[in-house]
Image 1 (cartoon, rainbow, N blue to C red):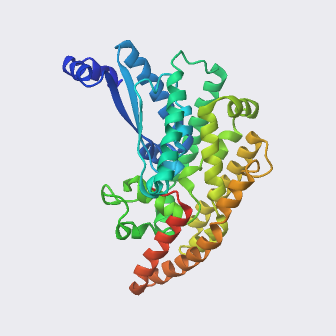
Image 2: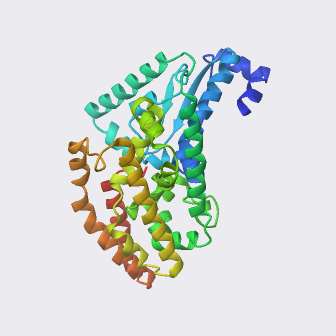
Image 3: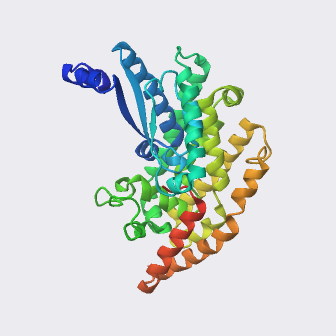
Length: 359
């Protein structure tokens, strides 16, 4: 492990001793989610924290996780107190550090009342997490189930991304070509010239958010959960915060997903291969939705929280016209009409603001 090698260096140990006696490690939710898929990335990050806690204990120092995350569940976004409660035992022994980015920073910190509430939430979760300093008591059956889910979900996710037709479909049926014009984040949209693999996490999530399908936040989960043990998953949902956080994030993403515009985006590039890719996305969405409902025992997503369903659904009448205009303008741009570029960017900013899970 890299941490073991770092702590074997005397100069590094001396530095840690002089600067608080703890090792801080940044956890990359964004790149992990893009490479592995949502469930696999969340589980690997949780396991990594466990291993880091163990290493730090052997060396007699504290550990602090720095969660590099965004607003979308695909980039680690979740309520701060939920993240803290889901930490492995000992993972908050040296404190907790996390990022708030994009529209998430505005929604949580732009007003003093909201900022205070956000601080209270993360503080309460961190205190609860810090109180769990004993050895982990997670049942072996739950760990085995998570390993199975992570492996299966990753295989499904990579099956989509590595499909020979995927990159062409993605480039032609989403507004990703405009990512550089929109100036999202502080860095270029791509690390280098190329297809989907070269994209940074923010424009990658942005493109799928514009289609209202949010693929990075849930694809592969339905296949994984359907292939697992439902009874074990229900027990994990009831009594284990890490899995409850995963299910909650999936439920939120699936509820926000709106497939009613999928055919409009497919119409931008209606090849047989693109049609096949989009059908696989539709099928996986249905599997994912059904799997979450089996676990929660509800008849519909957020069935136990009607007030949240109403609040989230209230956005759609305002976003739907923007999506309809966007697909029309994308078609005009594809036909060579450059006059639509600025109005198109305006629709993208509007959809991002409405969906509120891009940053």
